[in-house]
Image 1 (cartoon, one colour):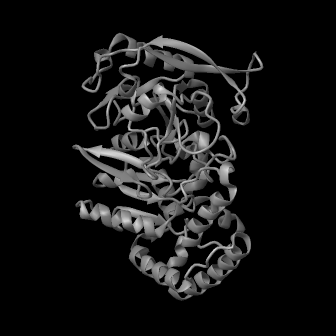
Image 2 (cartoon, one colour):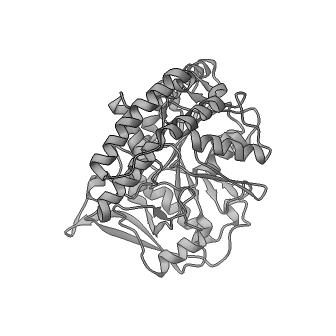
Image 3 (cartoon, one colour):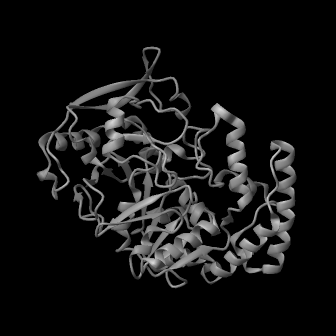
Length: 434
């Protein structure tokens, strides 16, 4: 069994900059694998000044000789995936059976899943979760329900696919009418669209689990690409304001079809501050001029939705918890340059409730905690041209070191801008980051 695999996960509420790190590591990997989530993820990679926003296709697609895998744990939207494939091809990026494999046992996101997502949020009103309305939750719900689910492998049997789409579509339309008094979907149009997408994608559908297990036994390097962030994990995040899959490193074996030991070296991605999209507790949020400064300087608007992100100081207690959860070996500290220009910086090192310290981290308590703050001096010098840790201003270096001390993990990589070249190797021994 190979031990040189790498898993990249987000340690906050998503949008940490995972795409850049995956891109850096992909060139030294044979496989890049998405194992969770769906088109609600948005990974941004900048290559030679050209920006790529990827939602379902793994970030390794920008590297030749990499096989990109959409694992069985993904909620796969054929419409979004095909649109993404066509957009990449228009930009002269090769995408096909030679470098993209889609698991036959992944779940298909259908148009009715997106409709249900929107109707659910509308009915909840002010208590809505704040989903991306991409149908991810309803798709996973049907996966558990089983008889109303469609697997990617079923796209290969056109006759049975048509029958199943008509059957499930009729059930969904009755449900929409009864529960939401909503207009029915045009099932003939859904059938036509699904069949065409199935024909387009058929050459890339295969048994990805078997492929990856063979790769493990042969010692080929696999890079597992997490979606969203660990605080959105269905089991370990700020439930119910979470996504609908296991997005921590704990989800890799089930979501990719590999043994637990295949997870390998875990790199936890974190911003130098904290953001979140949608509803839910956010102890370090700064709904003020500081938060707006971070939002504008960091261009904190959703890759998938375009929504402005909520912004605040770094919550190191969250990162410590999620790093422990996934057994993180090293950190990648992203967007450090965004903090330039602030006179002082704050880090949340822990919490109190009613004046008493909170010993054990519990996501369920985050709505009622008070932060324990530590204040550090900021810096004024722009750092986007720095290429070594030693090039950073002293206060920026001190900030990085303090993050390592509080979280209890080394910072392997520091990002000071979106470009591939704007990364500073620090305490890492991973090929591709060093």
